[in-house]
Image (cartoon, rainbow, N blue to C red; front, side, top):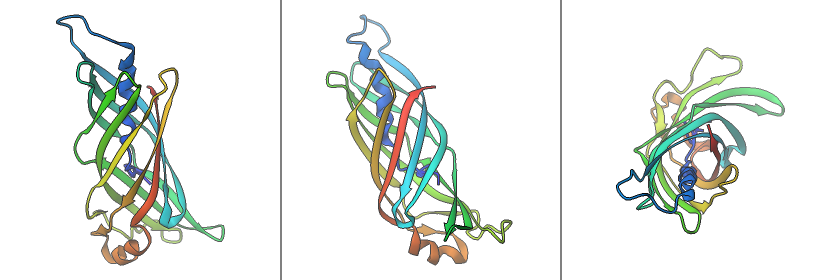
Length: 205
């Protein structure tokens, strides 16, 4: 799944504010100096989809943004590649699904430099890029436009470890799907719902 991109799939996503805490090593900026610090981090993420009881590892992504040391404001973009997962029944592979999550606007948040914590808010679009049966691998049964009916919204707050990697976990809900062809009713029976988790670890690229 891609979180989405498993975005979300994603949702989710919001832990990127951890990146801003690299700025915590700066207690003040010289007068007239640029107080905005650019950030580029590698992101390792995974998601658990409750309705399928399925864990999906998302290929490595990136976070690019900046933090304002004066206000603590953080903005940026989190890019996660699509993630694929083979679904098995009684140990036999029956289908392979590729999930994706893409940003629905920039990620925003706030860095508390005094307490070494971050809060971030993000919104992602969720889609299923393909779903193929093992005995018909050439047929994408959901077509090319299978997407969520609404964005996934994720918020996260937590401490950051500046001496190493920072890991965050958030809960999110998957929306109902549309434009998935004849498979739309089936997809809406087995995928949407809450109780999903997204875990991401941020570190230097």
